[in-house]
Image (tube, rainbow, N blue to C red; front, side):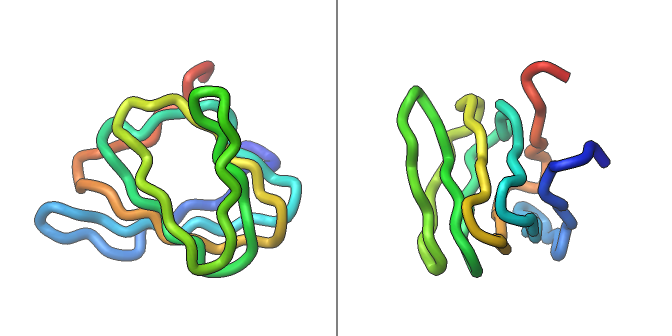
Length: 98
């Protein structure tokens, strides 16, 4: 694991969808990356900011956002954080400069 990155663990995998559990501490971030297919992030605890297309999208507990497949974005945790990400089973997270 790269220091400072939130942790991601696959909770469930079905025939067409999987659920990831994402946790992190205030100040952690995920550098620019994509999901190869559309993904839904649901904030369970804390808060974060997703930056996409030059815009900041603050997300609080119980809020959600659909992230288009192939869209470059970053995630910055602003308060200790737990979220679930739902995506297709064959979708992957790819970092842009790694």
